[in-house]
Image (cartoon, rainbow, N blue to C red; front, side, top):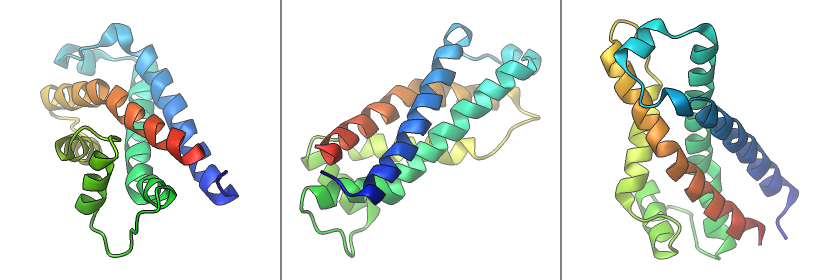
Length: 151
C-alpha cells in the first residue's frame, strides 16, 4: 500500500491521462493534422488541441519529476545522486520503458510543444502530429509505472 502523498501524485497523473485521452479521442477524426486544418480550425478544436498538448506536457513532466522516483523507491532502488539518464536505464531494466530513446523522444516532443508556431502552420501541424502519435506511448508507460507503484 502506498502512502497518501504518493497516491495524491498518481491521482494528479490519472487526471492528466483522463484529459489527454479524451482530447486524443476527440481529435481522432482530424488526425493527421494538416496545415489547412491548423489555419482553419475552430475554437473548439483549438481548445481540444490545447488540452492535448498541455496534458501531454504535464504528464511527461510529472513522470520525470516524481513518478519515476516513486517507482524506483517502490522497487527499493536508490535514487539519490542519480541523473535522469541513470533513472531511465533503471526503468529499461525493469521493463517499464522499451528504450532510452523513447524517453528522449517523449521529452523532446514535450519541449517542442511548449513553443507556439502561429506563423508556421506546417511546423505546428508536424509538432501536433508528433504529440498525437506519442500520446499512447506516454500513457502506456505511466500506466505500467502506476500499476507497480499501487501494488
